[in-house]
Length: 114
Ligand SMILES: [Zn+2]
Ligand SMILES: [Zn+2]
Image (cartoon, rainbow, N blue to C red; front, side, top):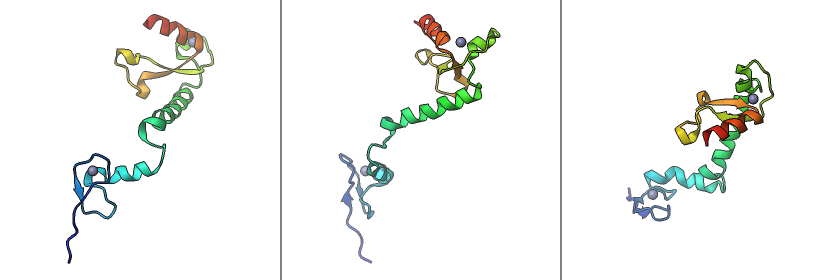
């Protein structure tokens, strides 16, 4: 059996070598595949799409009603999703930290947080 000669990893700037046919080291073997899907990498489309899905999910969960108004017994159609605890204050994108909110409440809340 002839042993394969290690070649440098195809990932630009990677110091590792590989004997694998696809030309990427252990660390980057998945990355090579990801990069083939042009423009579909993490940050670019990742956040926007994930957020859209999450946003729709929260609106549906809260029945498209503003949760802030609802606490005061008023049913207002929610158009946005709000971070209960603002991200600036350590809030996360977790479903438990998100609520449906109407524009008026959102505006008021944002003004308070400043
Ligand atoms: Zn590599
Ligand atoms: Zn409201």
